[in-house]
Length: 308
Image (cartoon, rainbow, N blue to C red; front, side):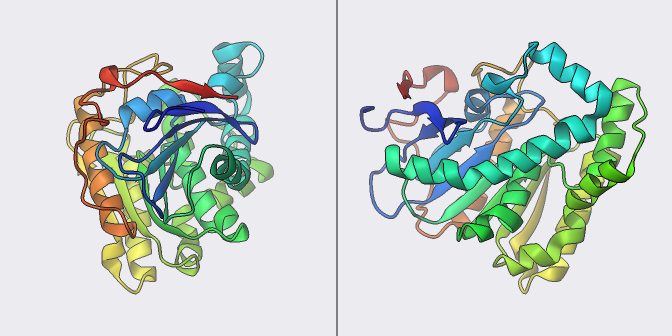
């Protein structure tokens, strides 16, 4: 059993996690579940250091993605890259997003039972491919599990797969050969075309945060398209929001992005935008503040304990 206010790490329903309790023990308390990028920060611990949601009085649960971190395939990062070059969509984007979204409800249930994560209002946070997981969880697995998502923050998000794959092709100098199978994955991961499902899931408040220096065709323009589509589908267009962070590219941390590292300037800006949005749209989340349990830098975070 970990001492009060200490982060807890371990696995829940087979999913690696880092859970950070709220500064103020109370009930009910909001819960934010987060998924990391495949770019830095590329593990749950590194993502928690980059976006600690500093000052948010809520449970913060960072889940590790399949094929990443502790679940890298045999052969490690080199094998992951090989799988990507072989077929990025069918070997990586499709399986990772599907599995991560499907395992989320069971992981949350186990964390509620074993760690004390409560049943308060639920928010989601994701970066890049982790944002695609958050969107699938929001419109597919959360409703199926009887979970209601009040708010989500999507950072450098994969919102439309085809343009994102084109952007990765430009980055690595390859051309992806689309097939009938990979096109089916692309249709599922085209969230601008699925905004009616966001509306049907209760019109959760969605803030999208992108970097001005990110690939415009792959990430910035699709993010703009998703925000516009959500605004059209929602009764209150202000519940769909887009923030562009100057001088920010796609990643939120420096390489290698595996271990917790000091928060970058742009990540600190993203964190502030995320906390502002979640505070405004998660019922019961008081105004963010710093306390003695909220270190001023990730380097000053208390030692973690491990839950078996």
